[in-house]
Amino acid sequence: MKQSLLFKKHAVVAVAAALVMPALAGAQALITLIPQKQVVIIVPNAAAGPSDLLARWISPKLSESIKQNVIVDNKPSANGITAGEFVARASPDGSVLGVGNTGTHAINATLYRRLSYDPVRDFIPVVNVFGAGLVLAANPKLDAKSIRDIIAMAKAKPGSVNVAIAGATGEIATNAIKALAGIDMNNVPYKGGAPAVIAVISGESHFVLTPYGGVNAQVEAGKMKILGTTAAKRDPMIPNVPTLAESGLPGFEISMWYGVFAPAKTPAAVVNAYNREITQIVNQPDIRNQITSQGFEIMTGSPEQFAEVVKRDAEKFKKVILEFKMQQDL
Image 1 (cartoon, rainbow, N blue to C red):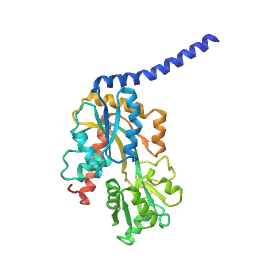
Image 2 (cartoon, rainbow, N blue to C red):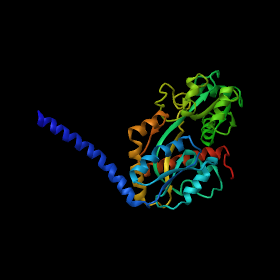
Image 3 (cartoon, rainbow, N blue to C red):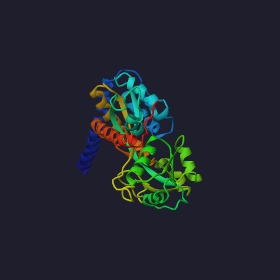
Image 4 (cartoon, rainbow, N blue to C red):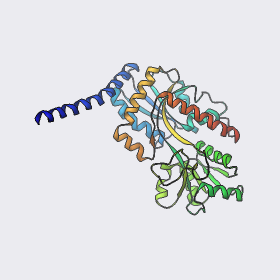
């Protein structure tokens, strides 16, 4: 009996060691590949948004594993252009990383005519950390239970439906609905997600397409209602809410993703080492719980898989941007 217990004890220790060793090896490999100086993670938005949270969730763990300071530097600007330019021009040695999202890369690739950098070619995708679809959040008094009802309203009275626009992704999602359904709705721009949500609550606009985390408190308080989600599958946080594709817009899918990028020409060995290390961090229980509690789904995967996501979405959004003449100069 004692021998059996002793065997089990050694087996548990062996399994634990097997799990720890790859992580240690990955961190050690990264240490030898990057300069012995602080690592900076550039965030394209102000504090508290999803891009900022991503950087602040992973930076302490990354600093601990590579035995170097990892700091977060917020460089907010219109659609993250300032941060994008900084990362694109940074030394490709692994000392500078950037947080990017659907807007800063896939959308900006076509939205702006004369950027000083290319949002796709001037970066190497490192890892797609998490993502989520948008939710169609409406005023609770709106006489609609699904996107099908909104389409019917817009067809009955063209131009009568006001959509609160909080950013480029929300505008593209709205225009994609218009194109697919063949309807006319008024895009009403607001300076950020909070003013757009307030506009819907007050009745100034009928609905907004925004991340669930931006409206869940208002929904729970009965100030808003959710009619659908834009992702390919239902949101696990609100499993009873159908996707737009299954409730009136077959084939519709638009999601937000948030990931880590490196400057172009960063060595593949560095990119792959960061991919392994950040993936390991993201899958630690405490970090995983923080991400999922905000309504996001953990993505990860290889740098090549992330590159395909960026390329696919850049092409998808390009069609909508050009069709609705959304391109603009700086």
